[in-house]
Length: 317
Ligand SMILES: [Mn+2]
Image (tube, rainbow, N blue to C red; front, side, top):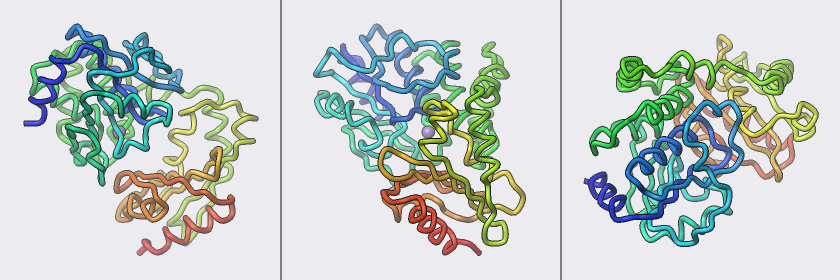
């Protein structure tokens, strides 16, 4: 099967580059570090192309292999993780994917473009890291304590701390295996889910103050501008979790977090029971999962707010 063929390609390759989506989250980071560490254990010259690494993941191993610019132009193998299409990666990194002799992608998003030579896609898996767990097991690639900690981070963050309905039996089986292995699960949980920088806390406070409830409380809406971010001093990744605040309020079906980009706004959506937010985001050229999705909206704040809310309203019961 595809995994066996990928292992053959890994064995043939010398220089390997690992790339995940831009504005990396816990799954992108955990999966990339785990993959790179596994490749290093197989004596490969492997690196991760990544920018904007959030500080709260500094407890993970393998960060010394992260580069923001590559000296090697043509890699033997490129492995793209956690991306449903190649546009999700930083534009500066696309050439390294295009130039690579062999291209692999491993992902769990729905509507994946199958853009590589070998595509391992399982949209039922809650995290790319969880696909890596079963892939490593199948291929006999050892999950060391360091690799296991990175993979656990991906699963914990993408399931919102085992709380989202995407969580599976395998997620808990793996968590149980981690405890047996001596991996500090409570610490991974605390570092990746519970510890807030001062700036992240201030950002959540502001977003909470601005939270408004619309359509009988079925929609929660909040926002943040570039000016707010500059004033608070928040870094990449520190807005993660804001959209969950609205979702956790009783009666809310869809939570919307709108934040300013270099051009226009980005809408981040979460749903609780029945609304397919991936479908909503697709109408604006975005995408994601059924209950967690996003879209870039190249318009003014008022236009973006009205457009996304009126699209959400169409899906409410
Ligand atoms: Mn993911």
